[in-house]
Image (cartoon, rainbow, N blue to C red; front, side, top):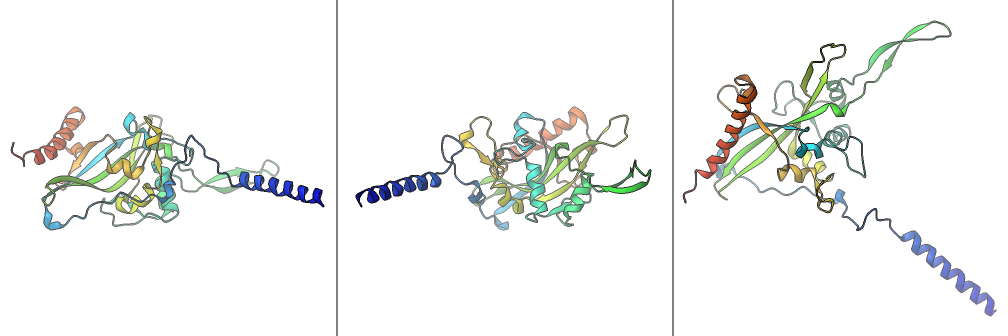
Length: 283
């Protein structure tokens, strides 16, 4: 009887150890990180129209070939749950979390697009090719689905509004929309001329919940990673202005200047916004 009790005690002890081992969680790193999917967008203060006595809309380009902007381009393939910005936007469009808008007409978020139209803008629509059966010699036309080449996204256009809030005496900015720009060469073009195409606009306030639940790699300190929403709100990107709201049908800088003069004009617009706030104060 005593042996039976000892055996039962050993069995219970072994089962307890197995249960503890099965409950153990794998931590892929030196410490356990918080669940990014539970993160919420950074709250922004409410702005009353009566408190804004100056504002200006500007459009700027984020070039992903610049070193500071590369976290928006990489990784080109998902790594450890991270993906680049265009893959994130496409997944959100495909799952109906966000709505894309036609970019060929204007940037006022008026005409929504379907995911099929987005794929078509990438040149990924289905095409018919001829297939030969080598046994019978019969020729048939079969559909071939095109491929979305996210690596062709080399720039993003950002639409934003700068405003001065007299209630807090601060100059602030709100991002209104993001538009990916595709760079490609036409099939059969022997000259290799690069074409640029604005694909679609997304309304930034609608995209924020999706951006806030996906991390961007901090190449200087992985313990202080940020979300895509943090990157845009905290202005961790480099860009240049290509358009401002003006009386000339909101014409672009490229409509009246090119090359070095266009870059100087972009810098002038940037400084004009900055100096507006500085000129309000006396020292």
